[in-house]
Image (cartoon, rainbow, N blue to C red; front, side):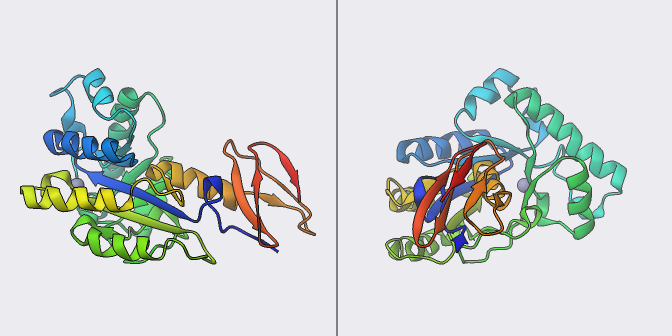
Length: 263
Ligand SMILES: [Zn+2]
């Protein structure tokens, strides 16, 4: 029996962070914390960063992190006509791609507003994931990445992070993701920053955890779901560009990108 129980390196746990609105001083301080602890994450940006800073400045500011979309002017997409959603998201994507110099096809929903109709339109515009603000307080991967519900806001990060780390040595039927979201501008006091650093320190540098951006997790899980498995499960073909790990008869196997792996 083949199961999708593993992240890269054969680990069962992953941690990602997701921050909205692109507030400069807060994001810079938060990224310094993430860099200090070797954590990865994603920053969902609107168009108002530019031209306040040059494209080169913005690109360097977010170096090492994923730049993702959050709407040109931070509108609630559910109250816009389709043509306005297209302007809001495509002009945001166009600017961010000219800054990041790579595809920007992830997003988070401004003002937490999303619907099946919005999700469908975003798919047509090329987006592959949309983060909501519906905290699950669990560690499950989404079935539909256009409605990607996070584990928690950072205000409960210490509680949910502790629950995640306390069980880290277990063996799990499904891989676990701790997904923390927030806004750096919500970190107003030194006490709040100290809690944020405590969360970072708590989850950092663990050999059983994969630290990844939102997009890296999307790409990996999608590659895993797109594996072509032989009918008798004797081999698997990985048509993606990332190595994928699976469990076969309780043993971990790596199926390299673009290759057929015989178990
Ligand atoms: Zn926002």
